[in-house]
Amino acid sequence: MKTFDFELVLGAPTTAEDDERLFQQRFEGRVSPAVANGVPLLYVHLDAESMEHATGEAVRGVKELGLSVRRIELDPDVVSADAA
Image (cartoon, rainbow, N blue to C red; front, side, top):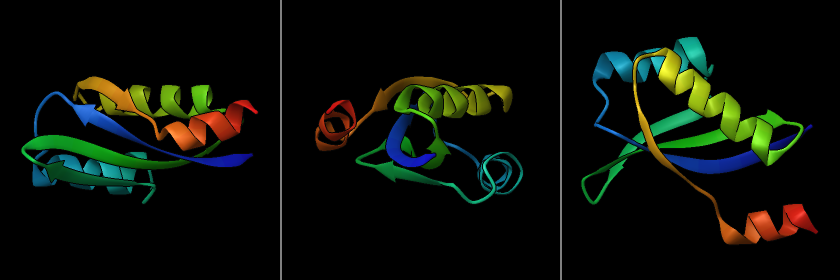
């Protein structure tokens, strides 16, 4: 397994309750909610077999809590290294 780091751009800002559920219940400390330039983000750090598995797990987890994901942002350097 490898740790993958990426960002989810959320459809709306999270509440304190959402943050607690994301951090404690669903992702056990492997995410960090934030807002950058007014855009709600979720910084994600997940162990998985591949980036595809990690992003899929993150999106499913967010949706299970009733939140929406607008897009996934990946670091191009990480994606290039993973593909090599």
